[in-house]
Length: 258
Ligand SMILES: Nc1ncnc2c1ncn2[C@@H]1O[C@H](COP(=O)(O)OP(=O)(O)O)[C@@H](O)[C@H]1O
Ligand SMILES: [Mg+2]
Image (cartoon, rainbow, N blue to C red; front, side, top):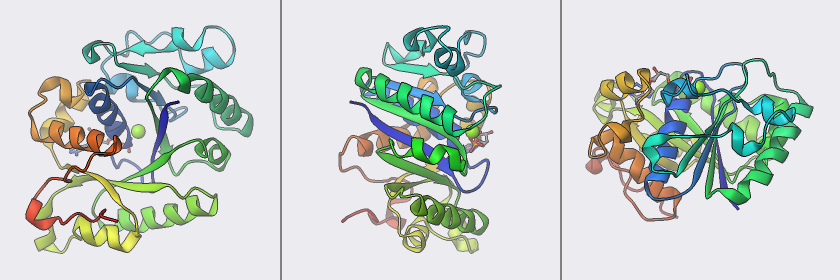
């Protein structure tokens, strides 16, 4: 059965979709069979981020309404050498209890065919989706290291816990340890304030933004590049290996040692 990771955030635009694409590519790089599902219903982006918008002809609603099989709706990402698949959200679906229940059933039956399923969720998952969120082995809260995002992440963390969702971890995106000198909180301080483990740190990176903007997962541009290596470290940590978070090692003791 696949391990299911749901990606969400307390604040919009923190990089959830960019994290979903690139964490999935990094897991597939380690020969894991991975499915990424765009669950930002009505606001899909991942087809653009994978650079395959012209190829996506089936969406999750086609499977839900019986117009095609689950596997027919999945798109193989060519650069992944057969390990990474993508299922698109539907622009015309909105969250309801019924919709969430159907998607949950589809995902549970697909999970036998994959090692990992990565769900790119919306900002602040809607109440109707919380039941579906129960199937996630981990919920990743993607945040940026600023006070506004900290406040919203903290609030969303409490809300998710109220829904019984306790398996939460942080992905700290756009991290620049140099900003700590200007009054920003360090990753370590944020992890402490939120009492959550950090799964990974991704640097602020203009090249990454440019490449995502033209549909290129960074690993397929250059796997030796710093940001590619940061995603490969996240994949290793997901797989249970002891791997340093990276980025300014001297600044970052391993918060997650338990
Ligand atoms: N580490 C980063 N460095 C630079 N730009 C980033 C980084 N992470 C995300 N971005 C950019 O930020 C924007 C929002 O990212 P996106 O993944 O769409 O956020 P969300 O899914 O949370 O709305 C995109 O233009 C993306 O390329
Ligand atoms: Mg998004």
